[in-house]
Length: 118
Image (cartoon, rainbow, N blue to C red):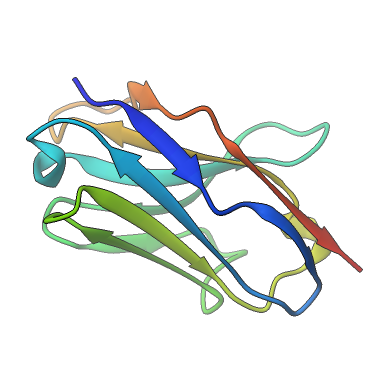
């Protein structure tokens, strides 16, 4: 099992940057595939970025070139560096984890609010 706690959200102007962090408990953090999801106001939750246990990354088209997902397995922390933020990036951002053999993300943080003003 793993417990996830996000931090780093806030209010930022369009064009600005934020870095989200996700602290994970447990000794097997390095073995999990990690991801960031977000839920814009009034919309469904969507996948933003993933990173495998080997560090392979994938991004939603809407954030490619602007967001970077990374992990520090020694510190049990997942990051999301967000640059050139747009108002449409506004939403609650969730840190998630799944075992490599699972298809569903079974572990979720409580979420952190990101608001981008125009």
